[in-house]
Length: 493
Image 1 (tube, helix red, strand yellow):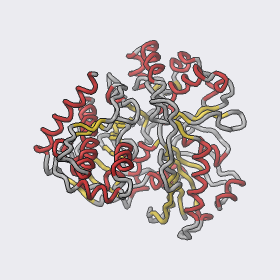
Image 2: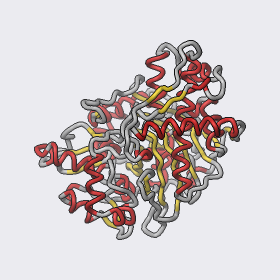
Image 3: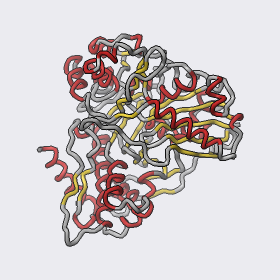
Image 4: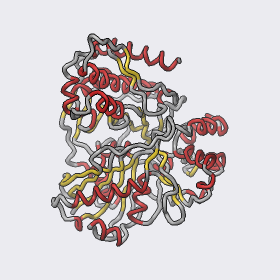
């Protein structure tokens, strides 16, 4: 018997099948092979097509089935992880009315700041744990203000993963975690925020029914089951944003535990049992997958927009013919500090940890007689690691003191240079695991369908692959402080 996990990423759709008894991954696939583009019609805008996501999801599942490594008819539940904070709006026929405004789109920053001021900073932080900022609620307000003809046709709003579940089941649902992710949830009152809804003039009818995150969100329709080679009536039993799901897949479930990821964006995500918030909203607090009104597990999220996206840009512009593995090997040939070359990796929209400022990505200190490709790619990896350190210091200000950080051996954590730099500049060991968002989503489906009695039961075979400890803390501390001065100058402009 098996579980199917779907991970709706910015770059592609990844899917995995996990055997229930062994918790082992038996097959994985993704679609498309090339990175999915982001539409940016104006600076700071970022959109993708929900219809395209669904088409890619179907192709990924069919490619998975074609592996012949499992019987698709033996799949018992489906889980979905997805890129966070996006806005999907559908009409009464459940058709999308426009492209999704995705996580790295910064057009709604001003509308979020106006709501923060009008509702009141103290109320927002104590009840929402965040400023409305640039999250889903503010994005919906932008549609209401700028595209009123589309807004009038909206039947339901949802996050990206909700749309995939809708296509599978025909049902629209949400959860407390999803509502908190969109900054719609009042943690003090345990209800949808009246203040947010009233300030923006949103009808409560726009919000889908609220279901438990681990629970049935609908059953696969017969025509979809036939199309995808599945049995009908399989439950979609789990939906989570990618970062809480990444934490789940790394078995980061208890207060004090911390996960990190360095994909298109970079994230440090820690668990607290307090309704914690940052006074300047540089980091954000959302309901974790294990949150309930009586077990207030909060995921404290530090996000850096420009991580993997920065590395991808460097690859495409400086060495498009090389693989990422070759780039990582090239970076290892340059010395610590990249011979004075410095990178600010902030070119993918306004950064929350920089108070929603946009500095643009910057490559600084180029010596035309000294620097080569190796220095460039090491400098990019070091700059990204320095951005993580900057964000981790903000988390430390807010009371988080991780002793170890868990990460999947994927994306930038495949690079020995990046991983060691991350450990050296933060001073915190990293435990690397075989990890995949779609695998986490599959195991989440097993929890939601009650195939596993508890989240802990889904991870009885969870063991680290590698443990990396600091080696060059002293050397990197001075280099980091030089980098931080450059960032401070960029922010002061």
